[in-house]
Length: 383
Image (tube, helix red, strand yellow):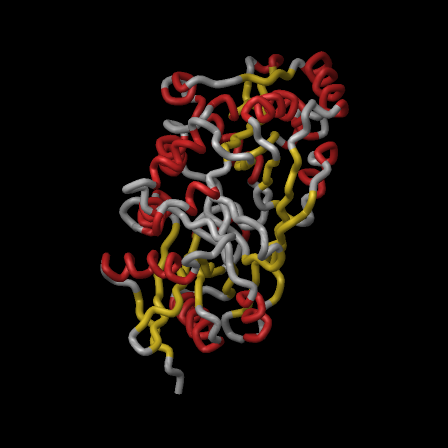
């Protein structure tokens, strides 16, 4: 008989324990980048996260001898299931001690939850949408994490192998990019060509553009169109887009945000790049994900004063019909001088599907190094 007890999260106290467990498990880890407690609370709270308009979720804690030793979320994204013709229950926010009984009990809880709701497969780690962390780290355990991804210990994927029945569903790669002192000639030549031939140009936005002129919504509309074909994607709703605009742009350095417009189509936005100073070290200094008493200062130093040597390339997307035209070169020729000005030494891409060669090829002039890999697993519920 298993000594692991599974407890469904039902109260605010339970949800607090669910969030706090990650801080406990990774206390002092030099590579984990913990999320802000307030962000985790808002994402997981059903009355705060707009994704619950088309998702449902249950959260589970694993206890041993009365102590929390693991956690997992069981998520059903009905919009994604409909789009991809699947009956998937996702597992996300999974953390556990190095005990196979614990990981097995957590995934069994997700399986049972999915089965009760008529699902056929378990897949993950995935969040509610692509804006949440995706994939389990399988390589690059000695590399610093980022705000947009999740870190896990090396024993996690070993447990997946040991449990059996789990198959690779999708692999992601992440790249380390050195910021060059000058714009690579290849980008410069392509940028000049696409400006003259296609009348495309880079533009910087103001806060007025984003909040008063509707450009914030336009940016995420491009995200929906650009990412629509990617693994597990579901379109962001208007309410989600409003949430992300209010969440990110009041504090964004718009010098690091670039849009590409088509002058032949009334300056329609055809490409975007949302990049930010790396918050990894700053978040590590926020005690247990709290901004107070001193966490806010470390975040402010990174965002406003660029006291970091790294830049995170959060979202870069070009509409499909403009990719072959080289529109992304305009993004890099605009941003690289700004990175140099701010003293950034290197950049980090976010997760990219290993099969997405068109995206990976754009990094060529920056001598990319694939330094992390992640995996999403799939398993039939009836196995």
